[in-house]
Length: 154
Image (cartoon, rainbow, N blue to C red):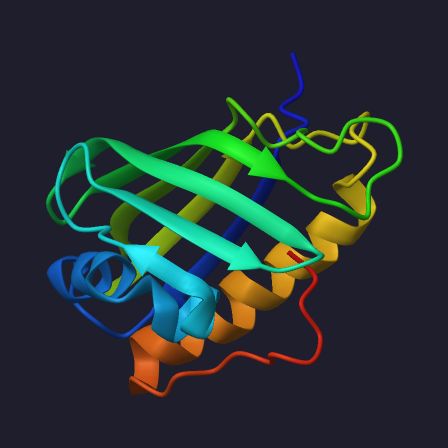
């Protein structure tokens, strides 16, 4: 059976532990910006991203394997720009899997439940591509916060 969930993969020249720390230590630097509150480091931590009028979501860390895997469960979500179901992200999971390949660290991201049948898929696909392949890649590689507050796709 074909996996239709949104996925993205990046490779970086950092250790798995460094990649893990970059993802968990400050989500605001690569995704949430100043609209993030809460914690995202330990099991059962929760954080909120709130871009008023566009995106609100609560993520709970439900699996944390240092240097290898992080799973966020979206426990609440509202995307006010959707017409059919503004809560599409609720009960979806964001999975970060870290491995090594040829001297590099590979980060494989899956937004489980974000599938083409969802109304937000096309726009969220573009948004996640930017967040994972640009913002997070640059945060991990160069520790440069890299987000655009004027073009919030997620």
